[in-house]
Image 1 (tube, rainbow, N blue to C red):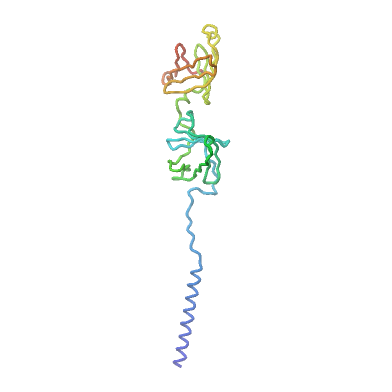
Image 2 (image 1 turned 120 degrees about the horizontal axis):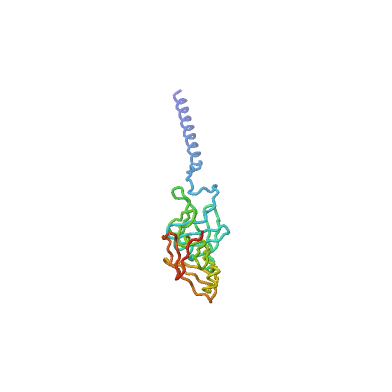
Length: 225
């Protein structure tokens, strides 16, 4: 009787060991738990980069036609440091290909978020944040039509101008109409006529006078109403 009980206990012990070993084997076969880390930029989020970006030192313009310009400061009227074409190759990456560098190395730009705001990461440079439009500069204040007794001056945002003399000035002062390019330096604006027969005009900018004026010799241009 005692031997029978011992054999029974031994069998139960063996069965329990086999059961525990099987459970441990199944546990070892289970995959590791997946830890979900949210991405800084959701790949399911539809996003089209805006046109203007800046980090306070440089400024980037991304045009809808696929061209770009990278400026060395905050004035979009200054010649860019680099221009070329851009494309969005993934939801989180842009590619810039400069026109004026041969061979043309593609520059990869990361799209991510910092404190909820979309930013562009340029290598080791500070992140660029989107802005609605470039900062207003002196050139912006000169755009449009200006008039004086001698005629009318129209300045456009492509840095071109057209001067049309009045009839009296054309007769009495021999003024001729001309067109060309313009450039701001400090508080002066210089008109560079395309015609070699017309000398450059340099005018002093007085934006804080009332009304604002552009002064040159005997000419005083004011905003045309």
